[in-house]
Image (cartoon, rainbow, N blue to C red; front, side):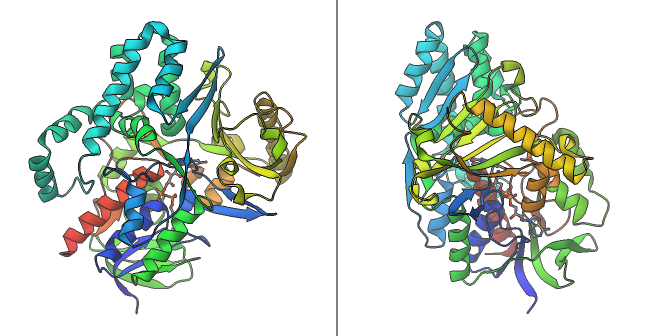
Length: 496
Ligand SMILES: Cc1cc2nc3c(=O)[nH]c(=O)nc-3n(C[C@H](O)[C@H](O)[C@H](O)COP(=O)(O)OP(=O)(O)OC[C@H]3O[C@@H](n4cnc5c(N)ncnc54)[C@H](O)[C@@H]3O)c2cc1C
């Protein structure tokens, strides 16, 4: 009863893609999720007729062509489909010195906007983004599976030698290295920093070129597509596909320990004392949570090294707002990034992110209203050591400041508010089960691109990690990649 082929701890998109890929191969899989619903950072909550995405809402990987459309592929593998709504603009940037431009789905339209601001850098802009396309085209020409599996690597190399060599060239590079080759204007280089920061939460010098190649090109290729019914539907649909293929998923099942015997992971223990056993254990919790909280043994040397290379990014202060529709009459774009001073790009509550998914899917709010999810980086330190009263006061104060800044882009926001839920790093830690509510790992210093990011196997036999603290990092499509590669490695290890 308690014996499985594979146990996956956590039903984030990384965990669910691993589980569904394995179930599709006939592997007996159990997913254990501590929360009430699947999805993790791609989950949702409902209140007063609004359905909010808790985190992600700018979704890559739902394209129909090529090989990098990993969400489409993950759903296909379990015979599931989702309706999506194309977003014509990825981001509307509102940046210092009146740099106000849109990243259109149409690549040439986007470049035209950029050329208008930086006419002297026209050639450099084209060359920089063309190099991003070179990375993307190489990735998008091959099946994306485990880079730890030598037969796959050999096969891909013989099928696509040039694409492989191109990727090997870019693997140790960061975006800053490439951008500075072509671009001299400091303001434009700041813009490239922001292009990276808004998904990698670090500037160009620390952002791996492989990830940037994906993001900067796929937005014009497969595009940004919003799942009808909200982002939470992705996790729910994958979980449904998993169960249809005989996989199991248990909610409110918090794993407190990975059982390790003779340096080998053999099972898990839940908070309620139940134990489950499997030939392979996969952790979708962050590496910090996995190796510091779920395993009693001394932390393996490789993990100590990893923690020297990568630190926890800050979490977020998030406001989930319900607003009268008239507030957004002059703002048709779903995603906005706002920054008033370049010095505050990485500062506590500096850059503001805004998502308004009801501009694409009206079903997420009552008629006549929209939802706005706005968030800004905030660290756990900022919210520690407060009495409950001080905490509430600090939340209200921070929310007030954020709304005041947003008023410049969305005049009448404050007056048009119908609903507000304030989340802090403490909320993210509590509901997402992520240490300090972190968004994910970021380089602690300048590293060689993605070379130091670990794959799925760990130093503990039969224990694997999946999700944003494994190659290639944060974002739904990235963790889906991690899920494909984890499942591939395990299937080979189990002889499937
Ligand atoms: C505010 C915000 C905005 C974002 N915006 C975007 C965006 O627009 N586009 C994009 O692509 N990405 C975005 N991201 C990033 C993206 O959501 C994440 O990178 C991705 O969802 C992480 O997936 P994961 O599978 O690695 O882990 P998670 O989503 O963290 O899932 C891990 C799961 O494991 C469970 N778990 C943890 N520990 C245990 C345990 N001990 N026992 C049982 N279960 C456990 C958790 O409850 C959770 O369900 C955003 C993230 C945030 C927070």
